[in-house]
Length: 142
Image (cartoon, rainbow, N blue to C red):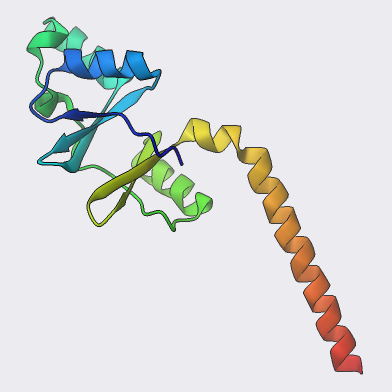
């Protein structure tokens, strides 16, 4: 999970959001309304809005472009559950929210980059489980 999430205000323009994405090298901004996560705008959303309206980004309100309601998860969600949620909703970015407060974001790219770490951890847990089962069997035979 990335904890440094780029946000933009609900009342702002697509121009502001696009500039923030470029400045921070990210592919989306979380749109906040009254301090709470409201929606998300991605690079693709920006391109669609510009092409469909044929208007400058500065004239397009974020409120009109943001995907809403925001599909979120919590910090204690497993990677598998997060991936399933992304698949279920056909999304690439999953904000992490606790008590309406934005805590971070998980992206498909994050998962792909850290995939080998997840696999290694799973193998370690499996090895640990096998050792405990072997110990239990030794105790049962004693």
